[in-house]
Image (tube, rainbow, N blue to C red):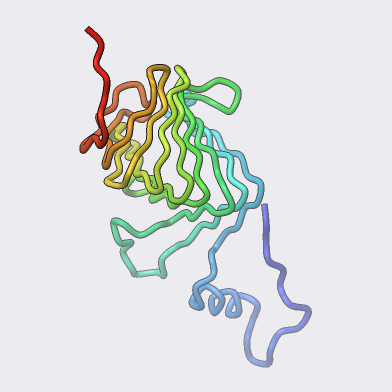
Length: 180
């Protein structure tokens, strides 16, 4: 967990608390975690785990109501979300270079080199993906590539459950061989 330290001296007339408030007003995160691993539970059951190289928590000033789409957690330098368990036992993994998570909306957005892999080894690759926790929905409007045991599927846009067990390519591209 990364933390900032207070300066050795206080500027005249300004306390350390006032300096911290100034830093928040300048747009610094209120918490920074490096090399973090977090497990999330619901009613005592492990539902997912997050492993992140750098995680920043942002907060809104007192009196402001957060925007529904405002990112409250920003993840950078790569992360892995283990869906349906922990890093050792899970139903699917979602990896990306960076992302945001909004606690209030229960929504994770992943960007850049996004890869979602299910238990059967089917692999989705895209540049942007949205995961909605409460609806258990994963979706994108961007180009997708899905590698399965039967071959490679491509298209634009996808809707899936979070475990990537049932999915639909919204606008398939190319040609597909269908067996008898």
